[in-house]
Image 1 (cartoon, rainbow, N blue to C red):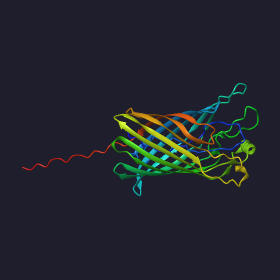
Image 2: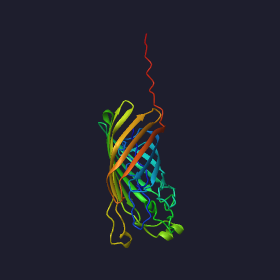
Image 3: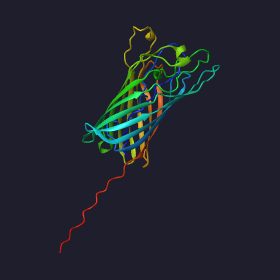
Image 4: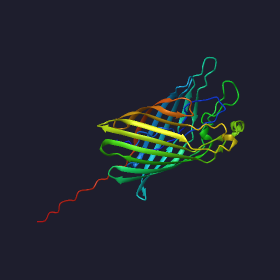
Amino acid sequence: MTVKLTIASTSALGMIVWTTAALAGSVTQPGEQVGLAAGAPLPEGIYVVDTFSVGRRDAPNSPDVGINIPILIWSTPWKVLGARVEGVFASPTIAAWTRNPSGIANSDTSIFYSPIFGSIFAWDLGGNFGVSYLIGYHFRGGDRGSIVSPTGGVATPVVPQIASDMVRQGFAASYTGDGWNLTANLTYGLTFDDTARFGGAVGAALGPIAQADWLNLDLTATKKFGKFEIGAVAFGSMDLPIDRGKALYANYTRVAQFAAGGLIGYDLGPFTAQIYVTRDIVERGYGSAETRGFFRIIAPLYTPPATTVASASPLIRK
């Protein structure tokens, strides 16, 4: 089974903090697309991919943070300007298990994250090269993403990114010849409202929340040996510059990271499984490096039956 699939959505949540400092980060989880040949068109059909990861930062009492990203992809029979049209939908969730020091109650939480609808336009350039363009829309749906501090009052939102709608664009290139998957995938997030707020009583208490545009880069270099796949992966993410002239951004901390690791995968026939582990090499704004493990399943739900061409009957003359 060829491992090509793109997109999903979730937070770059790496730690829960009870602080007045503001930080956000990528809406799309950094590293969520490594291992996928995002530039190559999918054969016609319906596919599902589910990526679950759990990680923890090195700072004392950092929580364990789990992220699950289920994605549905419809690779249509239609083409636009030579590109295969693929519809995508994802609706992730985040769970955090706090590890507070003695005397402070733990407060585990789970958050339904902003869903995304989008389209991918994927071109087969020949010679096992492919490129794709993704355009998607993150809706401000889901839970508010904030929990109350153990010391009382309203806590900093766990995922402030979900306060605003956002447009996501992706640009990917892949080489998939001879069992290789060499892919670079650049994702750009454009926020609609840089002073967004949550609704209801929580929004009234928290007020406007600083938002930033962001970039992610996911890199894959793996090779298949029969049904096995092995190789290296890396990813980076960063907030783009914000307007320091606004009072809301006086305490805003721009975040960035670059992580690397290894991937192994196996084609089980009905589905493909992948496992990869990464470690931050560089981080800025998060407070400490993160180690994160990922587990993914990729499966076709439907593929159209192969067409058969009837052989011509021999013409016999006497």
